[in-house]
Amino acid sequence: MTRIAVYPGTYDPVTRGHIDICERALKVFDHLVIGVADSPSKIPYFSIDERFDMLQTVFASNERISIKPFSGLLIEFARECGADVILRGLRAISDFEYEVQLAGMNRSLASEIETVFLTAAQRYAFVSSSLVREIASLDGDVSEFLHPDTLARLSEKLKNTQ
Ligand code: COA
Image 1 (cartoon, rainbow, N blue to C red):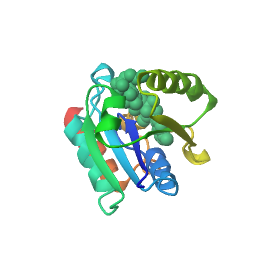
Image 2: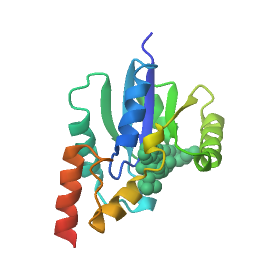
Image 3: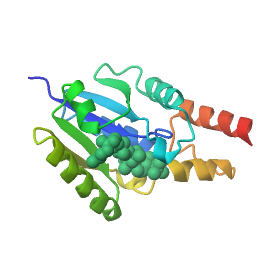
Image 4: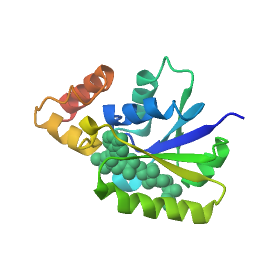
């Protein structure tokens, strides 16, 4: 049986924190589907196509990872992918309350799908996409937190929008 997990997020943009969770998840699951959420309520900085492209570049060489955009309910997306697991990363205790709420709600909507948590590596425990964007927009160095391609695209976009 192939064990498929869905790893959903907005990825605005993907960071090394997300990459770290994906790499470790492949020790547990056979295949990972990275679900790029539309997330219109977050008013993402990058379009869904841009976020998708950045993830494609980061994981291009990995046959065990596929990238798919989605809008609508996460549990429906997971079902479409044939996944029985939703993967989430926990960075700090502050993530816990929201994550438990999300997992509980998803379980009540789809009892056959389990949510599994992996803890973020300590060095990325404080990373978030919006903090990375903010620091970069103020000319701070975020190269430690981004894949070189993502860094280049963020720099380019900031240059064109400032
Ligand atoms: N490393 C680095 N950053 C991380 C991280 C990690 N391991 N895990 C999370 N983050 C960051 C994200 O980049 C994001 O940063 P930002 O807020 O600065 O943009 C932040 O932590 C929050 O991430 P997350 O909790 O994953 O939110 P999200 O917006 O990325 O994804 C969805 C939320 C998509 C999973 C959720 O909205 C969803 O399921 N939507 C579909 C609709 C649905 O089904 N709703 C009902 C749910 S019960």
